[in-house]
Picture: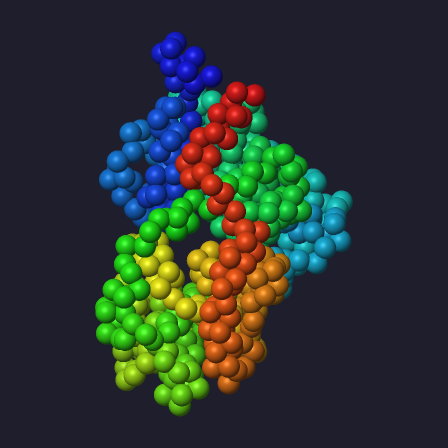
Amino acid sequence: MLLIQKKLGMRRHILVFIDHDIMIRHFLHNNTFSELEKHYEVQYVFPLYDKRVKSDVDSLGLKSIVKIPVNRARLGKLRQLAKIQGMYIDRKKKRKYHRSQTWRMMFGFRRYLRMWIKSLPGVFLLYRKTVINNEGIYPEMEQAINDFSPDMILHPTVLEGLFIYDLAFLSQKKQIPFVALMNSWDNPSTKAQVVKSPDYLVVWGEQTKQHAIDFLGMKPEQVKIMGAAQFEVYRQQPTKTREEICQLLGINTRKKLIVYAGSSKSINEMEHLNYLENAIEDSELKDCHIVFRPHPWRAPAEGEPDFYDISWKHVSMDPTMREFYNSPKQKDDLKMNLTDYMDTHNILSAADVLVSNVSTILLEAALHGKPVLCMVSNKDLRGNAFLRQVNDSLYFQELLQKLEIPRCKDHKDLPELCRKLLDLGELPSFRKEQLEKVRFFVDQGVEPYPVKLCKFVQEILSN
């Protein structure tokens, strides 16, 4: 098909909508659309002057760019409709799911009650029809589609955002295939706020395929497993050896490296690090060193001491994350902290064990064949409602169960659990078994993501 088009001098058109800096990081910085650009005319659409995109898109080196304004007031009404539709679906399926509980926590009882009433079967369909009719179409989006006349629309997304509501309706109206590329493993079960599902959804693995079917009502043939675009870098050789990392940390290469990865959930991470520090000092963890890798969007817990105010003997900051640790103090609203996945690849390749709470890095460490420990104590759960919601979520509980990840329920158990995982990681069969189990969540397959995506697009257009 492509050969015939080239002989005729024709190139079919692909329109890609990007609505967040995270999508720029996960799909543009790693050249996800490079194969498509070889065979198709590709144009990228970004929001104009919106806080979700703080990057300079003109410096990305893209051949064709369009920017369209966003009507936030209109968008707010559609987002509200999507949330209430999720409650309606949960009610219809007689399913109590934590996303409704999350919204009650976020919005307060009165607003949640109004949403609950609108999700009643007799009320919802009228409410949905009223909102859709009142809000009409997104004229600037329709104009961008008309101007480029795409044969397909692609949208990397968390299944919530600036564009996904209207893309589903406009693509159907104009009979253009619409493919959404899932950004993260919690999107279908937790983040999804769609009024109408896309024609196709590209997901990470079998877990998210099933979630797309269960929570979005998609058919199995509409859901394509393709792995995670941002994890393609993990196929490459690390750019730093374990010896080089130990040298940067100033420690003996014979030390076992326990990487403690922070999160954005406002947990007192210094308290956890102190337990590990004391365990090594008291010889409960022998010949070990802790590498602290703070989350780039960390939110320090109230009263948490500064890492640099503590005299550590056995804990070091990951050198690539020092700037990110300090950035919350700077409160730079114009900047979104985006780490380099190769830095993560280097440190996880060197690690012997990964300790974290509810961060995606647990999954990333498993993709490196490493043992992982969930550091979510009962004390942490009691003091952090948001942490409880994530910990109890379906996608996260499936991770703990399928990969048999222990949860540290009490801080005093931390040394013993780390010892057990260090021993487990020494077993010859462990890495192979871990890599096999993690495919349920992220199935990268053999071919690179850009190649698989190009073949999938060609398959849809050929049909």
